[in-house]
Amino acid sequence: SQKIEQNSEALNIQEGKTATLTCNYTNYSPAYLQWYRQDPGRGPVFLLLIRENEKEKRKERLKVTFDTTLKQSLFHITASQPADSATYLCALDMQGANNLFFGTGTRLTVIP
Amino acid sequence: DAGVIQSPRHEVTEMGQEVTLRCKPISGHDYLFWYRQTMMRGLELLIYFNNNVPIDDSGMPEDRFSAKMPNASFSTLKIQPSEPRDSAVYFCASSWNRDGYTFGSGTRLTVV
Image (cartoon, each protein chain N blue to C red):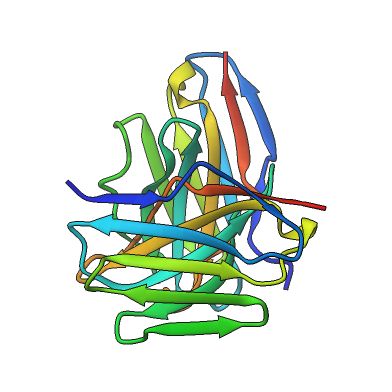
């Protein structure tokens, strides 16, 4: 069956360090992968999209990698700040399908 | 743009009653999605539209659920009759060409 796993439910990290979140998938051939941020009581907010033929993408302090051989994406936040505390969701668009499948998310807490 | 607008923000209803959730997508977006989020199952796609036409409703849990998109600026999700297990946060999202979804703030539905 199709499955998307995010490394842990919760991740605590010290302010200023780099946070690394993992998204693993099985039985998919995604055309692209997206990362979202969700704050309590709010809808997910789109952060980055990376396509299957791209290895890495950056946006300000964010970096995403996509390894279709390992079936894994890594999401990095450098110089983390308490304001980065939120739940981060990865989502995959399977080739030939027309919708996003979401992981269950990792709750990141950046400790001052 | 005001983003994706959902109403109501909160809905409490009694079992057996009809519930209607509303969504106004971002102008110019050609895709509209309805998702449901629970702690147990995360974000699940219920149905999506392309250019106002329903494309995939395989995620709609039962015949009690129905969705319409009479025009490009409005969509509804109806549950009739509602049951306690329908309690969840329902999100509407829209996108242009499926690149990066914009989510609304959601409707928190409680069926008692």
